[in-house]
Length: 312
Image 1 (cartoon, rainbow, N blue to C red):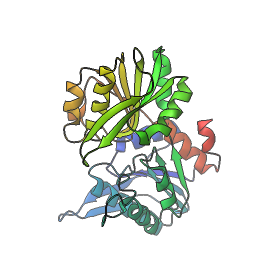
Image 2: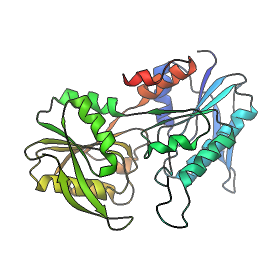
Image 3: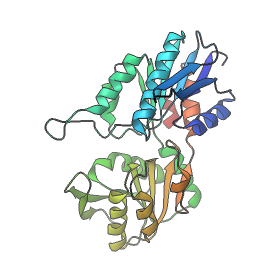
Image 4: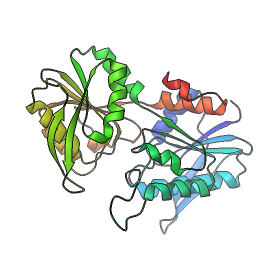
């Protein structure tokens, strides 16, 4: 492992340290700061010539800053003669802008993919993309991880009975099916109709949820309106305990307030793909670590071993 190096920006240094602990490696010295006028300043503080370098940097809020840090880090590593550069993005920012859903709007997820490639990244490692087709936006190899194993391990310890996995919308049915299969649980969908970009109006539930313990699964929670609305609908239809498992806890706007006010949401589980600020911490919110998952994937990529076998 002497040719393996890990660097990180300011997006999530705690996750980078946890990955290093799993791999029994030291985080490479790297300066990522700001010049007086606000421009990002990067300097790799040690020799990484000929090394296989992994840049751990989720492009989480503030998305523009973390994305620019990633691009500049990749450029610095390329100019420092790194043998291969992998952008490790547990959370892929701008992923929701993956198609033209209105006239005269950009496909920013594709633009970000182009920027990362042009900056000099040789491959990308990410987790639970908002839309699977984003993998095709890259002309370099992309490894797509899933947090399902981390959540399933937690739920198996709870030994819940009469379990039904629920997707909060029709688009998330594929993810919900993967959870239901692993947990040997039932499957249901909350059929929602969007009335504006910020709000939705739930219609009805497809599946049997009365008297059942519920696990709501989704790839990300932003303002929480969609998720909490689904929780209330499920409770009104006779669900018992309702838990939510969401890969990326963006938790912006009034999300924490909504979680706090919801009497029917027993627990919200998120991963540490995005750092959870102290002001966002709440008794209902539990963070599960993906450091081992990412660490194992990094080790397998470095050793040229199969990453897909992680999900067998």
